[in-house]
Length: 568
Image 1 (spheres, rainbow, N blue to C red):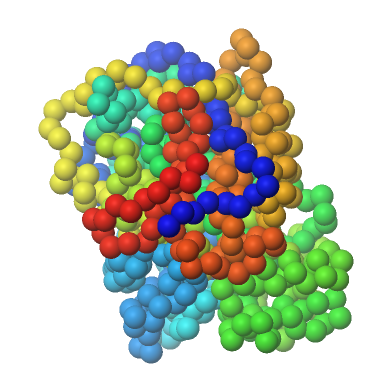
Image 2 (image 1 turned 45 degrees about the horizontal axis):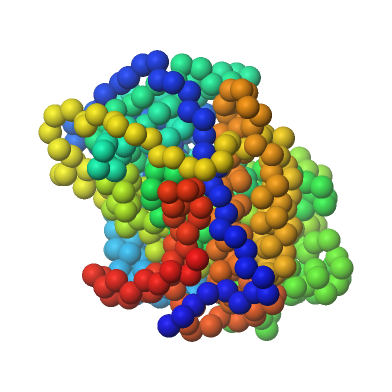
């Protein structure tokens, strides 16, 4: 099978920019370094500490910062009497549009209930039903009520609180306000450390040093902030993905960016982190309507307003394109006001702060960049193709999500993968001190000037959004090619690290979206509508010795086979 994009003019492989690393002024030796402090990172570190391993957590902001604490909906697990693992598996595979790894999904589904139980054992205050069991609700794509939640719509905040308190009680060493720059390698390519730097209040980098270790676990979250507007927090700039790529790992499914259908619309110029209106609101009975109050989802999908997110986002995008309207509306006025206040206190508050009242009027919504289904190619134990480098949570592409994430599988996956990764590391870490680092990865090109970031994000939103075209993606590529590099002699700072990561992510997005001439899951090509059976493959990317992106296809075949073919 010969596969590859059909386009009128070839696009040269993108060059991945490198970071001019500051020298290391100190060294710390530890068993495992975990980068990131969302659910996946916190659980990994906690499980390792429980096993007696010395673990060091590095987080760019404060402990617990990240996307987890913003999650509203909850965690998916089979807990209801009318539910079973086969249904959860089936729902996840259906949402994933043919790109899920069935074995990984089956493992997630089987281990999800225990992950919920562990959270409760750690003190998580979940919302309970009258019988004292976790209360369950439904979200898009689910055929049963299986979403566990806390604080009404504050599920992620409760998960974060629980894990942070447990981590502090365990005495884990944490480096807050510290950015991971690049992996350190032994002569055979094994990752044996991490170059990091402390971030001053003004964003300058100080006190760079090396964390020497047997394993680096990336748990840095996604790359929503590669877009001009997204639901993810400001720190979700794809740093971990860019670091892994420079370290020699492959990344996959990068084109599969999930757009949440109901992001509060606050004008065409809105940028940065946006207000999310949880899918759980529709799970409780709210519906999507147009400006005239007519519902837009019946007849589009059997689940109507609870269809998978890619279906609803694409439907909204098509409606807006056809009508010229700025937004559609989420109508929850048919729900009891007291129920809404109890079930969704944070959402009501955020809408009112923006000038809208969910209890009395339909509120304007549009799709917004939300969750990244792809990432560092890894299994559900966190193993990547680079010895010593692991990835868990949103930064990883485990095959669980495929071409589109099923709602509320994300935190569950992070917890399951974290426990599995920690168990593997505890069993397999070699004795003694880590090997001496001999080299850091090299790439062509310099770091990106932070002044170029706004233009990159604007182009990414315009050309790699809910719907895409080959011409638009070529325009995005051209924007990236001309992005200014950091001026010679200017020291690296946090803004340059993040701008470089955003540029890397945008290059991956443009490359992958151009290379997939079909519409599948989150990836919608106006010029290539509908899925094509020969493209039921994963696109994996790496950088070569000159820093250029190279792409191959990975067929979804039985374990142990190798039938990959290069496409670039």
